[in-house]
Image 1 (tube, rainbow, N blue to C red):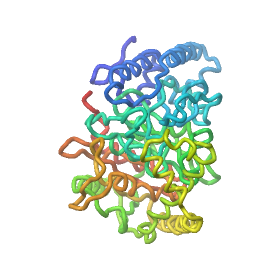
Image 2 (cartoon, one colour):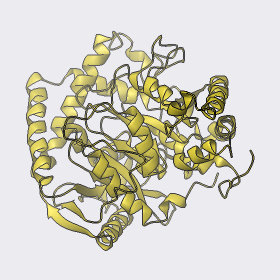
Image 3 (cartoon, rainbow, N blue to C red):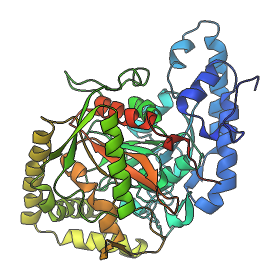
Length: 481
């Protein structure tokens, strides 16, 4: 290193992607130094947090050396200059362990795939490599992505960096914990019932579930085909934008894709935000509700108009959407010959849900699809009037590992139900949604604010999120590890 200012902690772990990229281009830091910083934190913190299932240290070092050579060639004005313009070039990232990676073990958090080494990359892994990101490892997850606590019976639970006795959330909990703990700059996740937004909320970072189909799930081990989404987790809105830009496919004509370099210029001066009357504010912890209300007031001070909106069918959608997920998951596992043939190799929670899925009647599955159309229309009608819907990402903060029930306002609810119910509607409809930090409880646990937008509205949604992030101090807080 030849100069420049490190983060206040004395290491580059919590630099933003933009800051790290600027330092790389000024030769104030090298790709090798960034990679070594990430690998050192993994070595130190992973035994406690258990965020990574596979670490590819030598591969990361090799990629960093290649990146350094490209930086050197680019100074001479070669074609390499175009490649290093990517905001992810030289940046250490991680992939959730259900993304295929050529030559690297890909377990999906399961015993069944414990020795699976793909001969091809997923589309997303390939795109991120083309963008110059440096892969440091594959992250722990709830088995086959079928759960939200990341308590994995085969590889162990992921521990929340803010409170190690608490869950990171799931199923992308390893990715969420790794990013929050500074073990990588960003990571990928998948989201079928909140599995990007839940760990983002509980770990105090940003997680984006894009419009359905916008990010390829080709060679990503599925959960439920019509509800699976792939997306990024990172520590800031702009970092999520940089990842998403590299991961996303082509936008339809007339829709505008987010641009990492224009995001701050695109911050809106006027916003119309919807406060849903139904569903999203039922059974919410008092401290979470207080944080969401404070976020709404701050948005109003930034020029937002907040109005009550109606989503009349969303309350009825929980069981129908569950039936879709159950049936599609069971069908996939049966089609692969995994279930029921290898039922004993699953954790109890996943095997029980696959058994339930095998019992879903065709009429109930079709009823779920009919409800999907109704709820889609509800959201589309609302987005004729507002730019985004504002709601909690989760109605509770991170529960303790092993805790199966929580009490919200004196009423008991399963942890699974509490964490999923705010998130499942946007999976059912395919609308983009993200979670951003909006406060901390008295126990210093993060609270997540959810913003839901119209299809292909990621550019506006991220800009609205950035307006809030820039007006707060939450981005500066990190776990004391």
